Length: 361
Image (cartoon, rainbow, N blue to C red; front, side, top):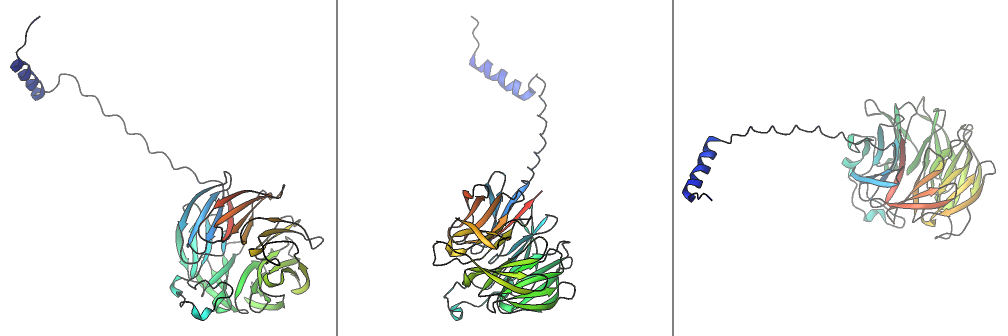
């Protein structure tokens, strides 16, 4: 065995390092192209959270929350644009005033926070704020996406907004505390409810003038039209009932009582949705805790289902077999299978979920 002196070994290593390796350098691995972002889910439900000021987005195909995204103060009413690219959310700087609270004890409103947030439906980011009167609560967008109708709760008026320019083109006086806003299917009339006056204001969309004031009941909230525009149903929170309205003559027809056992002495109707074929109407009842099913042919309820704590906002999915309700105090959303009339799942949302909208691609 041949012996090598340690100094010779070190010298040889040093010369090799100085001269470089005789082996050719290996080329660096080619850079891998960045993975394309996953496309957004085709069917999504959007939930406004009034107290946490954000938006919870749910993948309705997997029934899982995608995430929660900041909006602004007191997001409540929410509507999707006809093209499904945007959402319009009513933001308000007025402090919440639950029943029984003396409004004189509340802090002053932050009018800089009032507006309609236009949200990108795919990135969930605020694109712009449209200033559309004080304290907007609910809203409706025209079928052509050109106009927005907004109930300004503190101002006792409805604002008509040109969406292209983001400007208010008309301010229509209504009763005190306007809330619900709904456009008749033919687009010629918009209804606005006045909680304080117990009335509905029918507004001509061509002239932006009030056609008629319809006395309905106590504390009217949400509005739904039958698909043919013949009738409207208005939820009356303090009557535990719905007002049936002739939507062509704008006259009160009858009161439809909601009856049953719930978490409060009587139902407190809030949100309302109608099946596109006109076969069924769905009504949430706030602190009563139930979703009611109403047959418009009989104008009678045909069942109810306990869905959660204070269900308010309600939306029917495009399959017409699934409903989502926003349940405020429990900070969650209930998914209702209409075939079996059961709650199949609850999904956590933000603080005090209020409004619900759906977009399908």
